[in-house]
Image (cartoon, helix red, strand yellow):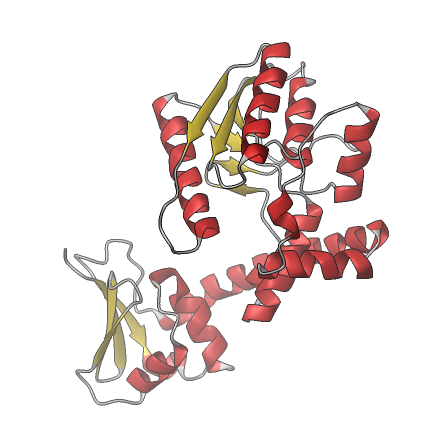
Length: 307
């Protein structure tokens, strides 16, 4: 089996391993436990949402046994989800809030997650169905702030093979078979359509798309110098002023508008176009109301709203 995927310096780092009781996270834990040369300090995080009855309790016991045998410190957190809204979405929010709190409280560097190549490709198809650009079809990223995903080069087949070879016990999450969730539907379809080689081939495409996305970002940075009168990060004190004449020279305008303003939460391109063709004095607010854009004669003025 391939080695863990390192894209950052992990030497002497303090890393939490998020463990659910499923095969992916338990293989991740086993691989990290075997790392000796980097002198990494690892501890385990486990959330119990008590959504699957006895299955959830079995996971708890399994993880406790593994951590005890390997002399690893285990941190557990139990939740009682009573809201009628999507429990999956709520559980995800609560889990990451707890992860972030644990990281800051105990001064750890990263939290390692068990997402693998199949997860990444499922996400791509999920994004395509909902509508997306390159960002949505380049797959899951290895690192996002304090979260790292060292198994992204591993297919599910490779993970299962490793678990069986090394006699790792795990518990199957029965909710993964519930096809009322779109991701689960996609997973079942892809199982029938794709073999291990196909997943690896798609992974090569994702790497190319990531490089192309980097090229786009570099190009947009050059374009920003062409359209902005001046650049400034403190938008409260000095708003950014955009030359409308230069902006209108860009084609296709909708794509450029998205790329230029997405970091300021202006996702409604139609409203941006209406502002461009409107009379001087009109303005629009960003999705989160943190920013506003105002038209003034032959300029667009971007500024941060005061709170």
